[in-house]
Length: 502
Image (cartoon, rainbow, N blue to C red; front, side, top):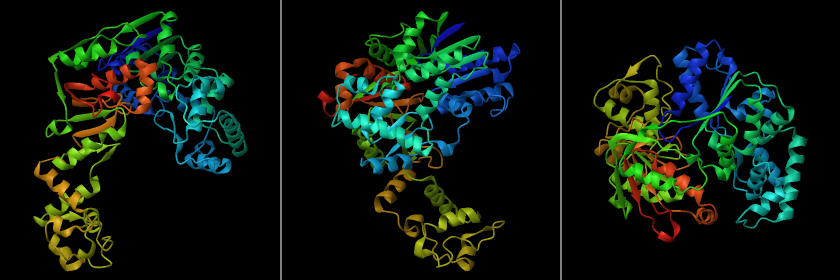
């Protein structure tokens, strides 16, 4: 028996799946006989953690089959990390073949391949699509400076290199798993984020469900935004002819009613090939605001998710945040390191007479430069069991200043100093995660915020894609718009000829 569960944005798909897990455990099925496989490590880990807490289970032992498909293949094939291709191996391969490779690696999060070398990207994408390399090459719309003969030779050389080194890559793992037809032992199978699976992953799934009594395939085709990495949403949609039942989760707990819901539906209804489905928004009415310039956007309060199709479109937003003294996160990095912010806070507390332990003082000493006597900069002479006042460290541990942080901390550039002072003046909670998070729409998949700022700018490559595959961009901006829980803020593009117009 196979069932598709369609989960539109914020409809509680993971909760629904875990409720099903609960039902099967109560029926006497052992947790190890339940497989829960997701496209991303984050989603698989979240599901395992929630299940462990709910059912009082051990993640590693009881829920060992809550993982990604790549992880399953890695374990069942008896692989080790030493046998896997790493970035330095790709660089060695590039040097051997005389091609520049600065970055090349598989993501530990979702198994997608990322490289600055287009030849390697094409080779891997063809494999996950289960296409002949030359057939895939011929199907590409915009091949830039890719020579057909060179591509074929590099593919052969890469296989030879891996064989000589005794190495495998993530795609090799899936190929080997399918080829070996490893027997399955799972009674119940859950496939989450199904819209993001590539054709090679679908082959692996089909192998697994041959042995399972029940299979649940969960996802949302409307949020399929990883086609560039080989995801095959059309295969997911075509499964409607093979399954026994299709269930739609029809109540969103994220999307507010009114203009945000209406705009998102307007976008997604442009997609030609999709599951027809409807869902109800929350009763609360959301707010939609539009701006012609980034300086008009006020992000001084609340939590924000700033989204664009490419990272470099976020530069103006970063500049605004720094000018206004708003604490932000970009590419997973905070605008000011937590280490520095803790040192600043502890320094001011110290000046007010509080006691600090040796680790807090060591952290401060690293920023004081000449304001600490030589030999004391690392705070190594401090007793790990004791706490100290500022005066004690002045008298005994090399401290030469008691001025405010911006007069005592050396090496801070003026812009950083001004930015931090503005943040503190604004009352930013700098000891916590930043209120404002900037990301590409792809990287923010699954995220949400009360306020979402959506940029409409497109790269040249995205615009070219839009001309022959508009569904891909419709899904991308639908995914972006549906991250908003209360307010959606739309920023006009700098160039209307290079934009997705909402």
